[in-house]
Amino acid sequence: MKIGLYDVDSRVATLPNLAIMKIASWHKKQGHEVEHYMPLFHQTYSKIYASKVFKFSDGRLITDDMIKGGTGIDMKIDLPEEINNCDPDYSFYNFPHSMGFSQRGCRFKCDFCVVPKKEGKPRIESTIEDIWTNRKSNFLILLDNDFFSGNWKQNLEEIKRLKLKVC
Image (cartoon, rainbow, N blue to C red; front, side, top):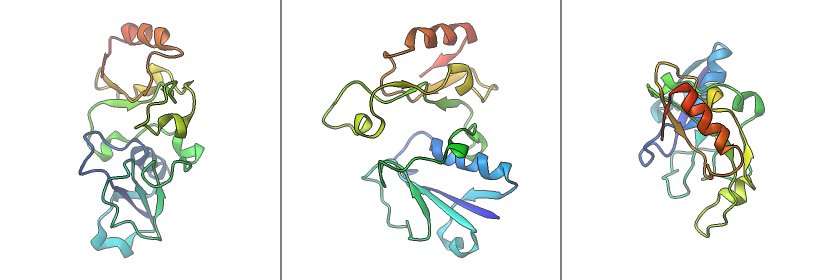
């Protein structure tokens, strides 16, 4: 199977798309060929996934035959559990660091933000050590929207113990 992965936000986002990297990882484990989506070769893909994080991103290349997701498409769509539980394939973006969520959700209700509506109240998602899968780098990017909630003290202790630099 040949899989095309379309990161709709790639022109506006500075970080790689975590969902795309997890989808790439899952499909590679199935023995599938995975590549960045190229519209010119649309008909050659067995499946195409489109991930759109931001509403303002240009989604004109999204077609009906794509598997679509992300907050910019629909806040209710989540990755299937078997894909969400995969470690990201950082090689898909040639990204040298690890990134992920130690917790999801947010206790604040800022008017401009969709996180509380989409993810609800803060809840633990993962340990720091579980997020840090790209062990060649000691730099970790946490995507938590509300870090100082829940298990933040344990996370800081884990970061210190593992000698990580964190953004």
